[in-house]
Each structure stands twice: as C-alpha cells, then as structure tokens.
Length: 481
Ligand code: NDP
Image 1: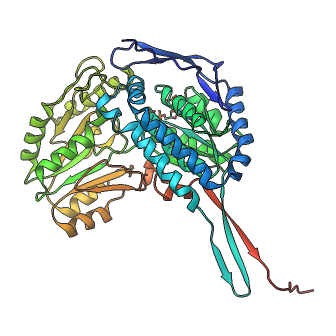
Image 2 (image 1 turned 135 degrees about the vertical axis):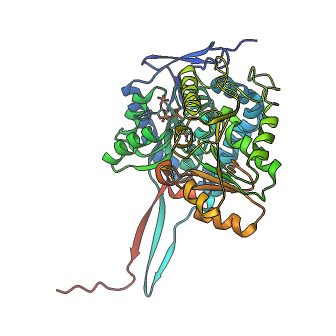
Image 3 (image 1 turned 60 degrees about the vertical axis):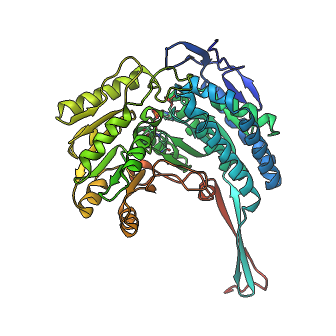
C-alpha cells in the first residue's frame, strides 16, 4: 500500500494550488518515519500574495447574503462527511494518530463546526437602540482578513474551527498549518472550492515559524488566531499588537482533574484515560494533574494500571491500534526527558515509562508533589501525574496554583459540590463527571496564560466581528452658536 500523500502543490492561493518557492518541507509518517510528501514553504512574497488575494476577495464575500455564505459552508461539511474515510486516512498519515480516532474525532469535528456556523450565518445581526425621538443601531461587521495558525495535534479540526466563524461573518482567511502537519488544510481549501466558495476566500500557506511571523505582520491582516504553545502565543500576540490586530489565543495547559471520594470510580478512571492518553496525550486541554482524594487514591491507581494493559500500540492505520506514535523524535525526546525528571524527583512510576522509538506508552506517576516539573510543566505527551488531597478548599487552591487556565474537571456525585468547585476553578473550559468533550455548541478556550478569546459556539462570532455604532438624528441639530 502506497503511503504517498503528495498534494497537487504546497500552497493554495486565490482558488488554486500554487507551488511554494521557499525551503523544502518533508512530511513524514510518524509511525515509520517514511516521507509521505515533500512540500515547499511559502516565501515572504507568497505570504503577501495570499494575504492580498484574501483582501481582494473580502468585499464581494462580505456582500453576499449571509444565508448563501452559510450554504457554501454547509456544502463543504457534507463533502467532508462523504469523504470522511479518505480524509481520516490522510489525517492519520499526517499526524500519526490512530485511524480509530481520526475517523470519529478530527474531520467530523471540523464538519460539525462548518455546519454549526452555516446555520448561524443568517442570524448574525446588530441591535436597534431607542433614544427617545432619535435612535441608534449597530452593524456587526467583519474584521477583514483573518490569519489562522495551527498546531499539529488536530490540524484539520483547527483549520475548520478557525475558518468557519471567520467565513460566515464575511471575513476571508489565510491559514498556516504546523509544518509537521500541512496536508489537511490543503484538502479543506479544495473542498471549499468544490462547495462553491469564491477564489481567495480561504488560502493556505506553508512553512515554519518564520512564515507564521510574516503572516502575523502582513499589512492586510486584521486578526490572528493561534493554536500553539504559550511561548509562541506571547510572540504572536506581541507582533499582532504592533498593528493593533485582534487576536484569539488557544494555548497550552496543565489542567486539573479532581476526583472526590464519592465519585463513580470506573467513570473517573475512563475520564483520566481520555484526559491523558487520547492522541498519545498530545491534547492541549488534557487533565494531566489528577488530584485523587486520599480515600480512593490506591483503588483508582490500581484500576487505572489494570485498564491501561489494554492499550494497543502499533501502526496507526490498523483499526485495532488505540495508541499511536508521538509526532516526531524531538517531541518524543522532550516527553522522555520529562519522564526521567519525574523519576529523578522521586515520584512513583505506576505504569508506562520510556517506550521505544516513536512510541511512549501511557505513563502514570503517583506520590508526586505540586512543585515537581511533572506537575508544573506541560509535557504534551501520554504522561499523567497523580497528586493526592484530603480537603476541598485545599484541592481548589492547589488546582489553581498554576499559570495555565485552559481546562478543569471534577468527579463527584455531590451535586452542590460539583458546581461549587467548578465555580472556584480558574479555567475556561470545564467538565463535571466527564472530560475532554468539546462539542461545537459549547465555547472553548482558556484563561490566564492559556489564552484569550473563544472558539466554537456563538461566542466565537464576537472574536471575528466588530460593531459599528450609528446614531440616527430624527430632529434638528442644536449647537451653542
Ligand atoms: P507551537 O507553539 O510550537 O506552534 C504553533 C504554530 O505557530 C505552528 O504552526 C508554528 O509553526 C507557528 N509558529 C511558531 N513560531 C511562530 C511565530 N514566531 N510567529 C507565528 N507563528 C509561529 O505549538 P505546537 O505546534 O508544538 O503545538 C503544541 C502546543 O499547542 C501545546 O502547547 C498545546 O497545548 C497547544 N495547543 C493548544 C490548543 C488549544 O486549543 N488551546 C489545541 C492544541 C494545541 P511551525 O510548527 O511550523 O514551527
């Protein structure tokens, strides 16, 4: 079976595939390191061309009836769902994530985003404000050209999540995927054209950080939405500030998952698995600090260690594989260094460890303390750190004792405690008695260092539009002289 996934060209500008003129970009299958495509980065001139194409396409796109823009997005969603098997396979080759995940999570979530915002398109209005005889109204207007920059863990979902709210509002976009996973966004560009989207409305450039940096400061760009790490977020936010550009920042986390002693233990263990090992742990919202009540700690860990034995690492294209390789060797090295630091600091390794080659098994540390790096730093791999607690107020304080604030979860059967604890946690996206579900209907995003702005839901529209206020004088004008 050929693993080639060579696209027609590396970039997509003004409705057409265009070859990049910059450095070469080898795209590798994380499972065996084989090259599945060879792309070329965009040059600075090509980034400017993509932004100019988006700028030129924007007025006509914004002038279309919203319901027509929505219809194009809905058509694109239908095409994605029809082609889901083929797209999932490509996503698996691009990311190394198991096909059993990419079939249900990646493009389907992207399609849901397009469907949701397609439906919302015709409802996006301003406000009428009575002022006695006079009145005012607001127009909700697009920002212009919105740049999107993605991480490598959910490349196609991220492209859809950023494109859908931007496009229904009448913005146009230029998207730069992570250099690790450039293929899905090119498919999305093709599908949009097939669905009837005019050229220039959705463009794709490829490249490493420097290409992203050129995109952020392009004079045609009015808004930047980044999914990435906190250090990159700082750089991008600062660069965007120079032009007073709007930003959405979806950054990293070290989220707490708190399990009280009255929790349904089996469900809590399932949630901890989803919160730490899905996508081999390469998920921003993961609940990697699992606070276990002293009373259930050992039972929980024993059951988790038992359940983890059912992990199947192997070729991600094999439908039985449920744990794939790490995206690349550098990331695997980083994760192994974090595991080594946990062992050196004296935490108890309950299961897992270094693994081999691109594979790192589900790894659980217990008896950790809050100051160990395995409890403070985002690892972005399949490494869970269990911490124990006794008291509710104590665990809330410790859960909040981090600069991050992306997500949080609570497991308890006590209704009032669940809501009380969630209300006290400093996190943008929370779950009670479940974890890591991110339906398009619910806003998603972080607080503190984990970012600002929200993706998904009607809340995302706030971040892709601006209000124009119009005062309407109905009588004469009084002036002092
Ligand atoms: P990075 O921050 O390394 O990169 C993110 C994107 O920014 C990439 O496309 C990268 O390009 C690009 N980039 C790098 N430097 C610059 C720059 N100076 N200007 C503009 N763009 C730049 O993140 P990763 O790809 O390693 O992804 C992992 C991180 O993403 C984790 O911290 C994770 O928590 C976070 N994340 C957050 C999510 C959220 O929704 N909150 C969801 C998923 C991940 P290139 O890769 O080509 O260098």
